[in-house]
Length: 119
Image (tube, rainbow, N blue to C red; front, side, top):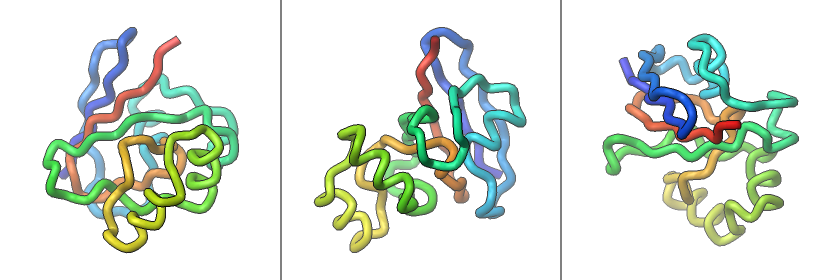
């Protein structure tokens, strides 16, 4: 069962177990279930409010499902990902960088650290 450690500068780190292999629950879903205060507005990948940094504990593993179309558009608008990085991701099946939208990133079977901003 993978673990997710939610980390913030204003809140104590919280490590939770997540259902492995469901391929349905997003990081935001897991955060809400475990009372982790990640900011969000739409929950649908349109606004970018749930921007987080995600790091796998095992650097050799993939980092969750590929970026969604909504996520690519928002991350490009925010300057967090380039088209070259997106193209490389599609070829290599690896994440282009650590930036993700918590409402779009679906957990796979890896242990993660999720850094989220605090207000």
